[in-house]
Length: 595
Image 1 (cartoon, rainbow, N blue to C red):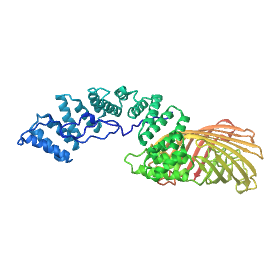
Image 2: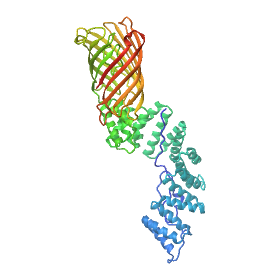
Image 3: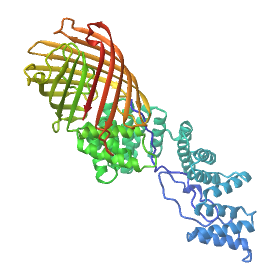
């Protein structure tokens, strides 16, 4: 089940007090569902009593009121302060100052003044106004407490009571008090309105009451009066179906809503991510493309678009998005983890690769784990071989989300044979063929090659090969100086014309160390190796051994967007025989270049 991400619409109503001259507007102005804020009204007659023109406090208050009307908030604040200074006992002047402070952008001071007034005389309207100010200042818990006090003064069936309870819900949700939020709108649980149904849906989703949330979102979608609200509720409904693991229903509702235009109220990225949730990569990529064309594909979204394009084998497009993400990350104040970025760079390096090569020089009785699917297995006894391979990945099918197809040509020569066998040019063995890695996430390689007799001691034959490898910590890490590393490699070879069967297994386990004092791309890997080998052409077909080893690898050929594409490594092992003949015993060494 995918992780639930709970978001709440930004258009829900909040408790608001308009900036009247001397006090809050009546709570009847707190209309639900984004109703327009009432215009400033003249203060009630009982709040500001006529006073002789010679009264300087009255004159200052009158000037402040007129300044509010013409929206000169700085002048209004100056004059309101003067009125309170001259007549601090006048509550109406203090209310005027609160509104002037709010209008002039001093919410903290306005809140402090309301708090002092409430300490003298509780007032639900003032509590509501302080709730609004606290919401503006990010004090959602305090705002919820104020709206709860204000709502208690009005019956749930009144317009004021309903507006305050909805405001209480919004503040409680913002503070994480989901149960409190649901209690605030409990009187309207059976009400069929968008304002209530949408709120209940998100609260129930936060409580993981998925089925109840689904029903609430479905209702809200039918009651929405704008395309944006209908789209938001439909997206939420689809998301809950995913959370319920009802993927078929989620995909059907997504496709139906997209075809009907219901989701057009959402941004391109919203729909792209919704498509990802229901497992529709082609639609996700289409909307990522729309976002890219409109300049909306920024930050982390570029990485997500890149991975979708990669899964759909749109390699050039994936490279573009990954590169955008890397550039955005470099300019970001809060960047992603270095190892994540290096993983993206590794993706770019692999997607850009069209051809490559593996070259090696090795010494030993039964060889060791290859850097790639390379050499023909050596014969019994300690031998030294040199050789290499070049390969090509054809367009379109060469790399499809990590499923690879490669054509190759290779040649190997024996340059030393402990048994006194032939060495040099007569032993040159050529092979051409193709291999296939069918599964993106599994390193299983199937290979067929025609062995070509280039030296008079080599042979013509067909070679069928199956190779499997797995491990962890084998790539370069940039986030730590050393890390645990393990890997296994297994291979089976069938020579069809000579009816020979050869199998190889090697496992390594150890700790990799980045040698930063020399190069931050140089890695030393001390390890213990375990080896098994089978060759049915020999008198003793099986042999087993184990022993310590060292690998020193230098990574190179990288740029801003691609991780190191190549490495050269030296391998040294000393093996002890466990069972079988002595082929597995002694020194084994090699140099590999993976380009």
